[in-house]
Length: 418
Image (tube, rainbow, N blue to C red):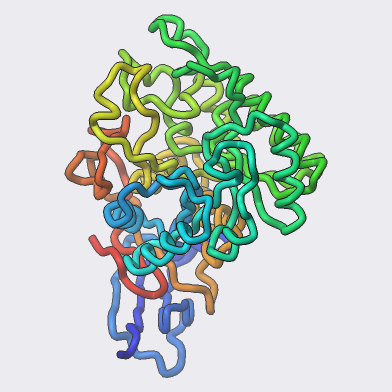
């Protein structure tokens, strides 16, 4: 059967990698971008997508999305314009064996929506003790290794893990939080937690862990990615390390660009996150770090059922769904901080694709045709019935958004159309 030949016409084409921001048609054939601008010789479109008053950009690349229900979450991904995502290893069971990774990859390929790139467990069972079989996991499809939020108590074990990963040119991803400093904490150690009587997690829980990771990365030469930074002090440490030549990158969860400790309100469990929402000054520093290109942005998509959220704040499970909100919240940030749209899109497409080392994040001729078409001015309200994820847990429920995905292509196939 002949593959579709698709022409996306009259759209504003934004390709951050190649510095393109202009009206142009894009032509897709055989799963790849065939041409931009002029119709290629011999091209006959079997399908035309009219993108008048819409933006055509590379499909979004999400650095962290949990998928407890593959079918519904991958539908949520493409509904949010996400064409590729990294899945953390804290699944059930953890991704510490090659056959588990292979089954996940095969299942996701069979679903045929967003492309899923597993992150392998750094240690067996994520217990922080014995190293996992990284070589076997990499062969099975893992593109990096992580503990997710689980700690490694023995610093020597972390050093050995980094040495081993560096020998094979594997990347390590860490969510920096010192277990003992954060133990029993549920909110930022600040004024709001004190007023509400909640146990606090101090900023130093993040900075101590970052400092340790950066020193070990400098010692071993490993490629280090720090996930979900939450503090001004944390991004300052990464900035300094990069100046000193450490091979480090980082990301920030989208909710940390828009919310602060004040949004806990009166014990709103939907605003409980790991790491916690911090002070407004931290939020401003995080936004600046994204604007300057120091940090990328992830959805930190973490579906939690009602039974995990309808609890007292200190007992509720942390996390929120985020894949369908990643794009509109990036657009909101760009408007509020007067950031060029190409910069905002780079932080959720080309930049994370580069960190993951995957073939994505641009609209170059010959590139896999992973494409997002969205209306930047479309208004909509976040309601349970408008979200495709199985769970609906988000502090943005009921809020008005501007910007919505109209079509998503993965490998040259239209996998979502509004």
